[in-house]
Length: 370
Image 1 (cartoon, one colour):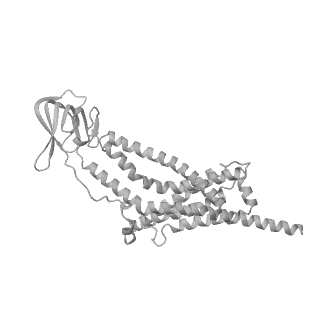
Image 2 (image 1 turned 90 degrees about the horizontal axis):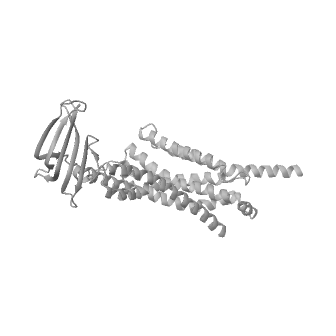
Image 3 (image 1 turned 135 degrees about the vertical axis):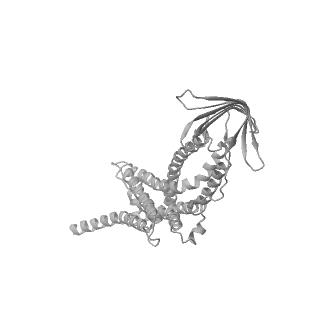
């Protein structure tokens, strides 16, 4: 029991450190993407942390199996390098017993991954979809930030306001540049609006206007001296009417219980994918334990790169099989399971072939002495 606790602690500690690093890297890249959208006025900066929080379960369900895989390789590799595994082998620790001990923390990780994959991740995806729908419902006026040029309407309009009141009802020092479209949809120049101040006005039919006061409008084509300047006291700019979509529309957001009763091929593929992630944990554990065995002279990182490539091949084949299942090229009865069976066979070969070959060699040596 002492050896089991020691090995489990080594594996889980290393897995936690590796998973934390991977989570920070992935979340940083995703956060930069959302931050760029917030800077463009596409997202409300106040919703960024909520979006990132709801995305964490989806990140973890893929990070934890990889973290466990690397944790086994690194922790057991250190034990082999420092000859601790040699001492354990001398006291009767076989590869089969080591694998059995390792399956206990792997089962714990698999339970956590199953909880994430089957329950938390769909909820998180649904919440993110609802937040993004709410962001789509915001008008350009709602996303303005003072002192910053913001590209809106897919880049066809650039808006700037020098100051914005705390209740977001009054603007001052307004600049708006937008592309003018001809009847055929082609660009026919640009229009520039400059105003001392402005405010939002909502009509009874729900239409919203940005009312600009005391300013100028300039229309023309860049490179041509045919600009037209118009001075105005009041000018109204129609803000696009927000459309709220209550349907998230993503398979990842569908509850697992609904996927089980569904006959849709794409939803069956999603269900098999959610089940495959916990199964992946046990199979990569079966592969990692024999691969972690290294010669002290070779160093602990000798098999790390081939092991990572093997893991990536496993995950890539699962993704490819999922795509084929989505397109109807694979029947649901077959689905992703051939990939699991392939790597299960590889794991069994790695786990039991080397001890079997060593036992056969010992028997041959003993017969030779006789």
